[in-house]
Image 1 (cartoon, rainbow, N blue to C red):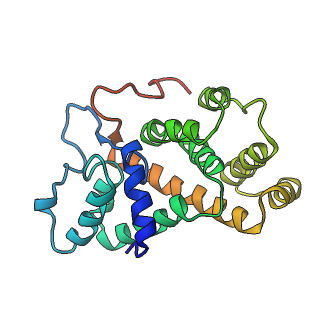
Image 2: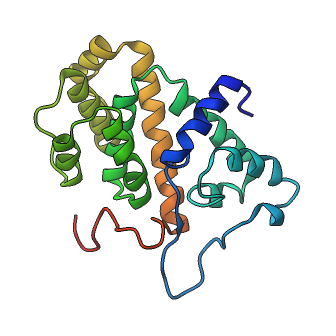
Length: 218
C-alpha cells in the first residue's frame, strides 16, 4: 500500500491531469465485446476491492486504463500500484526527464494511452514543444539539452538494442548519477509493461478524443 500520507496527497493532486499510471481510458471503440469489460467499485470481489479503493482515491476516470486489466490480478496489481507510486512521485529522476522517458516508451509502442496522458504532463514539466513533436514524428529530437540527450540515448539504446554502450552509459552516469540511471531503467521497463497491458486489453483514449497516432502510420 502507498503508506506515505505525503505521497498520497501528491498523487491525488496530480489526478486532475490524468490518472497515475497513464491517463484515463475506456475500451477501444470496436464492434465486438471488450476484452475486459469495465469494472465498477460495487462489482469488485473481496480480493479486488482493497486495490480498487486505492485506485478510486487517485483516479479521475474510475477503474479504466491499465487499472482495468490490473484488477484482474489484484496481487500483481497492488505491486504495480506501489511500484508506480515510487516511479512517479518518489523517483530520483527529475520530472521532466521522467516524463520524457515515458514518452519515449509510449512512442516506441505507439501507445495511444501513454502518449495521450503523458505528452501534456511532459510539456507542463518543461519539455519543449518541438522536442515532443519530433519524438511523436519518430525522429530523434533536435536541440535537446545535455541531460535530455543522455536520457534519450540511454533509454533508446537499452530498449531497442537491449544493451547500453560504454559511451552512453558513462554520459548518463556523469550527467544523471547512479541512482537516476537505475531509476530510469526501472521506469522504462515498467512503462513497457504498462504499454503491454494496455495493448493486450485494447484500452484506448477517452471517447471523442483524437488518437495521438493515426492508424497505418509508423
